[in-house]
Image (cartoon, rainbow, N blue to C red; front, top):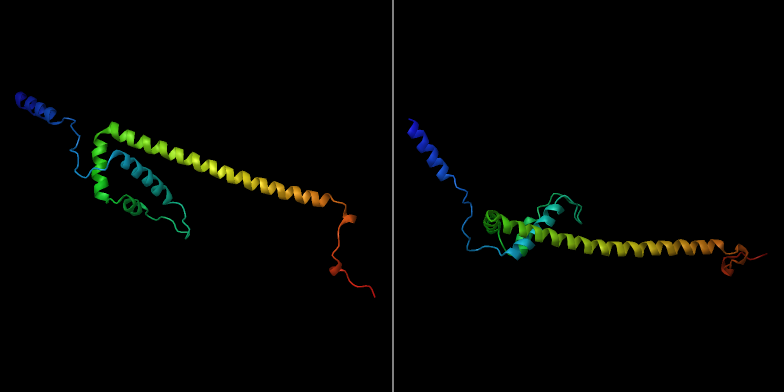
Length: 152
């Protein structure tokens, strides 16, 4: 009985190898495209909870991402599973996507701050003009001759 238990344990240990690297699928999505796809998927999943121009929420944008890259969800799943089995490559894909999203955020933040500064400048100019107008001598104010009532 002791030999049988030791043989079963030995067989179980030999069968439990960590060989989880899958075969490369024939329609594998390239790494750079996969990174772009992950970026778009992150944006699409974030946009699900934000109202669109029609004031609607909870819209699934993933089919639009698949259409943009001309792939289907099955191809993405097989490629994703393959890259997940190679954790180093998978990590690089996500780091690249994350860095690219950070660069895009910085770019749009600069544009937003520029627009905000232009808006603040125009508000400041409007206030300055109003102050100048209010500070003028009221006796020098020009009157419209058409608005005056004729004297009788």
